[in-house]
Length: 237
Image (tube, one colour):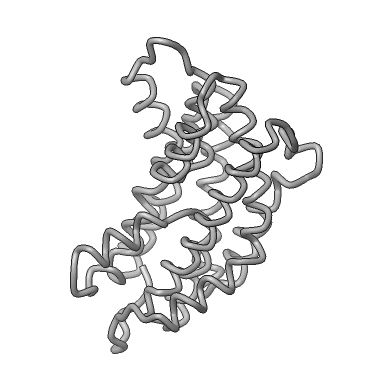
């Protein structure tokens, strides 16, 4: 975890706008994935309003695509819950890493309202800033709002067209998020200290992809890297 600093946590409009502007360029690519999801959802039998509601409330592209794979009538609620939890389990560690930051917000509405917009990209951006001393949670909120807006726009476009970029990999768009996260990691502080946790997480993920059920690599990689980081911190202290 980043060291404690004597700068008070805040949530400002200026910080939110800054986060929105900084995440806006990446959000353009999210429009394509939203479009692809709505096309796939239409093919799975969902109606336009159902698709928009899912994107607005769930706001988790990988989980939404995963649920479509098992979409049937009647739908097994347990299966949907398990798939969603497995794919998004990384949010447990992501949100835990933000706890020293968001816990100082004055109201629960601000804390949980901000965390609703938590995703990989705005977490990486804002947490990198947190390491560097930033304490305006608006960076996290604004970045998430930009991604959410782009996701909703893409979903709406896909519903309107009924067809489109249903294969993002064909255009190489599936690597945009990975490249962004890699830049955030390499641009952070304590680089040497982070080599071991990221290496352990990568190796565990690859092993899980080979030998464990689908989506298990998300949980295994996150836990392996997180536990390694905790161990390193304990040794340092």
